[in-house]
Length: 82
Image (cartoon, rainbow, N blue to C red; front, side, top):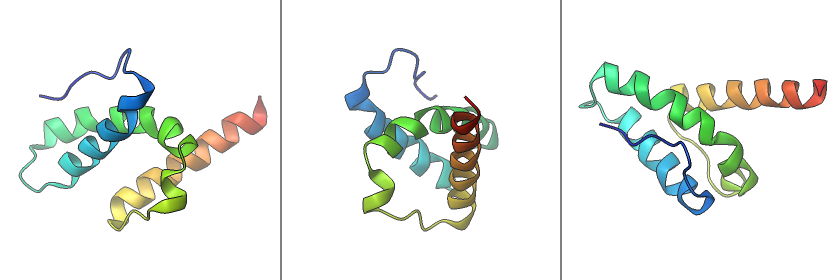
């Protein structure tokens, strides 16, 4: 099973984000686990974005890239409205 991200130290955000992404992209990962990993991945997105991950690396999987792009756009909208 996946680890909960509650109280996850900042220095562990990037490795956990990568682990979630890899497991989500692994064809052997059961769908129920993918559904469990997705919100964890999205909760870590602001931290890894602030660390500059997407300035250095590009997500090559089209579906994962679209998911992250949509979430980043939603977050930008929330921050702009605040």
